[in-house]
Amino acid sequence: MCGIVGVVSNAPVNQLLYDAMLLLQHRGQDAAGIVTMLERKFFMHKAKGMVRDVFRTRNMRALPGNIGLGQVRYPTAGNADSEEEAQPFYVNAPFGITLVHNGNLTNAHALRAELFSTDHRHTNTESDSEVLLNVLAHELARATQGAPLQLEEIFKAATAVHRRLRGSYAVVSLIAGHGLLVFRDPYGIRPLCLGRSADGAWMAASESVALEGSGFTFERDVAPGEAVFIDLQGQLHARQCAADPVLDPCIFEFVYLARPDSTIDGISVYQARLNLGETLAQRVISTVPPNEIDVIVPIPESSRPSATQLAHLLGIPYREGFVKNRYVGRTFIMPGQGVRKKSVRQKLNVIASEFKGRNVLLVDDSIVRGTTSREIVQMARDAGARKVYMASAAPPVRFPNVYGIDMPTKDELVAHGRSIEEIRQLIGCDALIYQDVDAMKRAVRKAAPAQGGSVPLAGFEASCFDGVYVTGDIDTEAIQRMNGNRPRIEETEEDSSRLVLPNAS
Ligand SMILES: O=P(O)(O)OC[C@H]1O[C@H](OP(=O)(O)OP(=O)(O)O)[C@H](O)[C@@H]1O
Ligand SMILES: NC(=O)CC[C@H](N)C(=O)O
Ligand SMILES: [Mg+2]
Figure 1: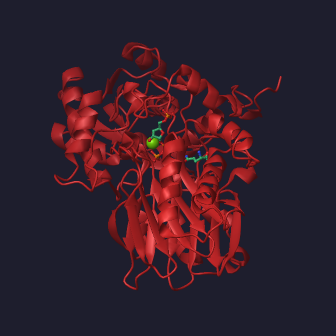
Figure 2: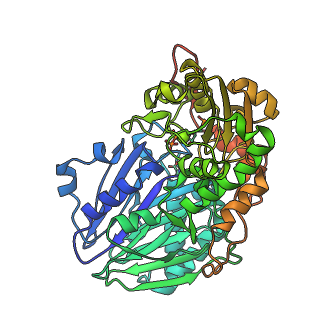
């Protein structure tokens, strides 16, 4: 995941973009970038780091114009360490286009070869988003054939782009001298929504929290396969450009990725998490008698809504046993297992009195590599807990994700190829309770409104839990190819994060 945003206004947008990106910071902490446009000229600043570190006053002053876009990056393709792969990306022809992307193309490898041999376009990084931009540029050139750009050609190009791309993509792009083009893949895997301000400005963003926090009113989600073009006068034009759009949003957004105060495709993330706590309660009861649990303790941050609901239903006290250092980022989205492990301890500290002599049930939203749970269980024991039970509001994560969440190989997943009992032993808890896959889907769906958008909710992209890849073209070979170009982080206890490039000996 990454966070993306675009704004068309009649006043400067640099501060608006910056503020919206701060509201999306939880979606990517690796790099940040903004492009604005004044007349036909683009102004760009991007670098590795979090928003507040990347942009100084002098950078902000150098971003003039009433239209622009931005991204916070969490790399899932290419090289996490590369400054060049920070977004936005830019191409000069046709017209001049910049683009930000949230998602992951599963056919980037084939497209890159095709771009070079057939389309005669050059890409200069390993990023799939640069490939995406070049496909869009090629299709815009093909649709216009040298003539001025009209609305019909924009939608024709978007249609052709959908035909060529596979995987997940929520995109905001800026066409110099024309306007903002926004589109979402035909399955709607990654989120994207639109909002309006009182003075008529438009904002497109990954999550509704960015709209609301920036003074915009949520208008609607971008439908899967839909392309929306907002011209320089602020007129919005929309068209369904995919042959067979279906809405299968990524369920992990509701489990962990998104902010709880966001609504995605009509589903309140907070309500979905409460519901997950409710169904989890039934699983807990069937594993550990509630009278053997003295206290329920959430693992901050994302598990809190599920843990409160669980505690409420079981009638067991909910206590804060871990305090989070708010200056440490999300550990799951940090590149490198060593960095993640170290930062769990830096990030969370125990309140020993909540554990001493008690049987505690720790609740997390998900267990991915098991780094957090292992450390946390040990910390609870060190603090004097008698029994430490562990519950996950999501089912076991057993399969790699290829749609923009950084869990690319099955071997790194603690639940892959292991029984619940084996995972329990690895994590070191006295009982381990997982949500069930169908119950998770039901719980999230229950938070959906009766009436959906223009494309109704079909199901969920839940491949990391059930191994079903909604785009249908993913096999072991495809996963290996996607990972082939990604640098690995070599792990040892002492030297925790040495970067190893592929092909390095
Ligand atoms: O099994 P693991 O590989 O450790 O990953 C799972 C953990 O990572 C996430 O927390 P994170 O610290 O990223 O963010 P949060 O503060 O929003 O919960 C998630 O909420 C789990 O706690
Ligand atoms: N998480 C994402 O959405 C990543 C976007 C893109 N695949 C990149 O690696 O930069
Ligand atoms: Mg967490």
